Amino acid sequence: MKFDANQRKAPIAIIGGGAAGMFAAACAVRRGLKCVLLERKARLGSKVLMTANGRCNFTKDVSPEDFLAAVGLCSEWVSRAIRALPPREVIRFFRSLRVPLRRMADGRMFPADGKAATIVHAFGDILRDNSVPVITNCAVKDIVPDGAGGFVVRTEAFDILASNVIVATGGVSYPKTGSVGDGQTFARKLGHRVEPYRPGLIGMETSDSRVVSHAGKRFEDGRAKVLSPDGKVLFDYRGEVDCESFGLSGAAVYNCQRYIQHAGLRDFVLEVWFGRERLKFSNLRSRPVKEAIVTLGGVSLDDVNPATMCSRKVPGLYFAGEVLDIDGPTGGYNLTLAFATASLAVSSIARRVH
Image (tube, rainbow, N blue to C red; front, side):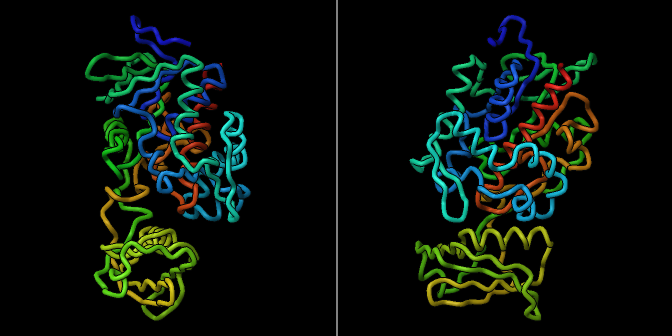
């Protein structure tokens, strides 16, 4: 399965070496499909290494139905991908790579050693052992249909001729990890609509002394609610609340922030419990998108077939992961969405090829 550097041809070019890209390459290996993986940074999985504070909560051990219910807004669109690769299949995949795993009481799954690098190394091993060409420090500059049903994937140093392309470049949060919006730019140029970017799963700002005086403290048994101005509970989540120098973070706050963004709320109250404190804040501002765990927005779902992950505009062009306008709550959902959409893209290509 070696890449022919002279002809520079590949049945599948995977652009982006994050969660979706690495999983796509691993799925291609298991289906006997040749591929090449292109990553703009010096190593694979830069953002994966940051997940769950470096511990990598890669999925949640729940049924597909419970998973989709928690995802909410885009659940119908991603349902085929999740039912084809439900959380327990993700768990089985990592066990097949001999990664020792740890299940938390609430179903969150981690590598047993608590190191995200273990997950990234497992991907590296399967790609190395199967001679998958991985080209790092290689930013893709353009994707051009070649007029014969394939594509020219252009980089600064060379072009690759690919029969199929999977765009798995992520969102625009944490740009230092390589998520700079490349895939959305390619998509827009090829006629796809891109939904506006917004921050998802991120802290909210307040200078209230009752919060900032606790900066650096984490309250595992916290809770946060989103209320309407008249006091109606719109969203409620029990989980970690962290106090920061800028305000509030932690799983409970992140999931409330995600709800606020998706609901488009401009007038709301955030009620937060931590320690012995119960505080209310009106219309807190989210931190900037570059700091967000996930990017809301991305390639419009109207332009991608949810049964295949293939573009409705350009045959042979596929999308996977956060480059799409999909997202889930904190707790392993977003990595699973990346894995499931990547797996569906590869299985669709396999059907097309065979």
